[in-house]
Image 1 (cartoon, rainbow, N blue to C red):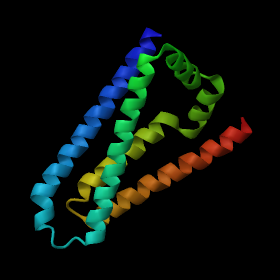
Image 2 (cartoon, rainbow, N blue to C red):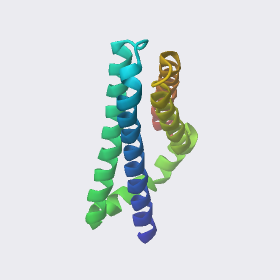
Image 3 (cartoon, helix red, strand yellow):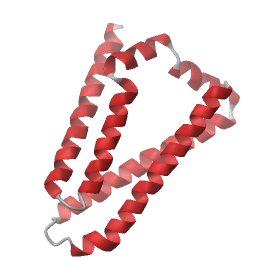
Image 4 (tube, rainbow, N blue to C red):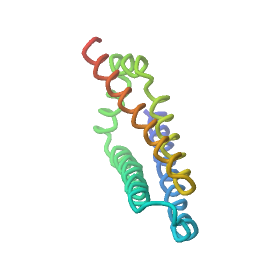
Length: 147
């Protein structure tokens, strides 16, 4: 169980680091890029800020969830059994699991960062992330019923 606690602490650190990195990029972008961005529409800037806010929310929510679980032994065991269940592992293996989620997050972060410079690249990368996420969800539903 100690190894699982270390894993959760690592997840918390990664979530917090990612959240701080994205927040720093938003602040830098708001100070330097947005005032000079006359070629971007208000829709683009609003969509980018909204998307960044959602990513920040999920990173903070994940950190809080894991912090709460670390404090309660019963919830820690429950989460451990959920993540290490054979059926859940098989479904994650078939659907691409953590790799696909990491790729989606990397593409989304790249899209948010590229959005400060080019609107077409921003919307293209966001569309790629949406495609990956929808494909993952469809595969997850399919294998949940098949296995």
